[in-house]
Length: 82
Image (cartoon, rainbow, N blue to C red; front, side, top):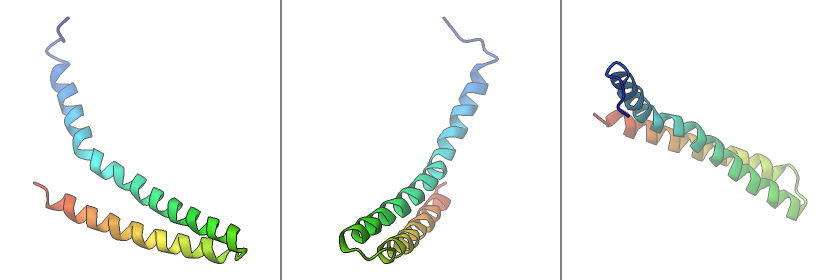
């Protein structure tokens, strides 16, 4: 069954917009996963070494630093795209 002509441009425009936004939407996930993973590693180190909350804090700080560096690198690469 064929689509009506009036709906085709709207769908193509919507898909085009989603394709353009997808890399930017992934940035939030990338940043949050980096912070959570390194914070989790710090928490595991705390639970094994009984050094609470030093490992967690170090993990969160390192995670935020690494995540933000990667965030700005990705933004720089995306802004160079045509």
